[in-house]
Length: 182
Image (cartoon, rainbow, N blue to C red; front, top):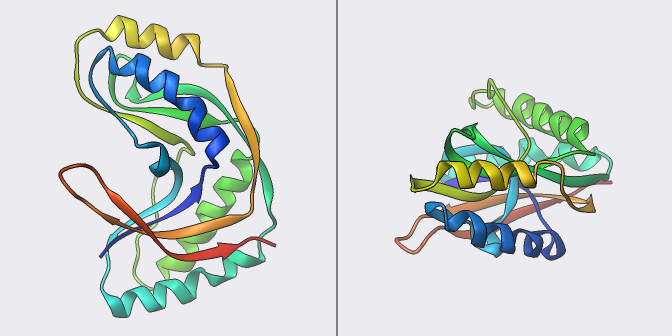
């Protein structure tokens, strides 16, 4: 099964991306992420068999000792860069330090069972995936217009272990385990 670890985004944050997703989709073939699938990925793990999943689930349990914290979702950007975008994302203003600590803790806890730590991590919510660009200038302007926009704030109280099944219509996510922060 294909899995990842994520911080879910609440509905009130996800719905604020909808007008932006409409705007960016006018710039070319850009697939908006389905509202219910918007999240912040702490770590993409990939394919895991049942035995490894049990061990992974156990090794993630110390995450529940971490404190809940506030996240302010703010700004737009693109990976690898606005002039050659593949991913359009919303960023994190407040809470980035705690998210980075959770990411590092996750990497530490999973490295002992054979999962490689990530070299680079940038907390973000993917809102669109670029297939083809018709109007790079328009997209760059949209990103610039929203680069300092605050989309809202919420308390991160849980981390989810999620299975992702890829289908022609898009991924289907299933929460396998939820870890509640203290």
